[in-house]
Length: 141
Image 1 (cartoon, helix red, strand yellow):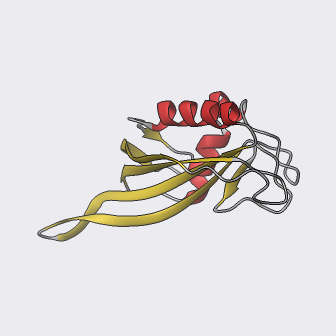
Image 2: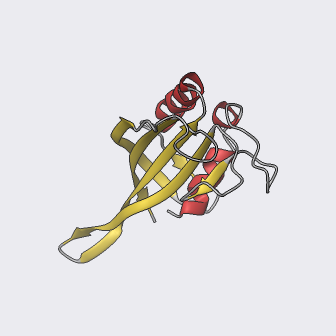
């Protein structure tokens, strides 16, 4: 499972994208690879992969893989951030299906759900709220 395929899934999910800002550079939903760019608009999601491993049996790796992805959800207002967080949590918890790259997701498990607030005026855009969701995706390759 690739980062690009997960971002495509998020971008293709209207329940999530209707809550996000429009990305200044692409004109699409504000879903970013790993970090927010300099010219970000809120609310936004930054997605990154932080772990992955093949399942093993006595013959070595098999066709089952587990990948861990983190969704950092940012918003200028608490309710905006919470709305995106709630929809992402609901959509991905227990998710299964086939991605655009052909990856079959057998199951998705919520590993972490944390609020990570920033202080007001902590950066140039006065971002005040960040929440993160960490998911383990079990896929068949």
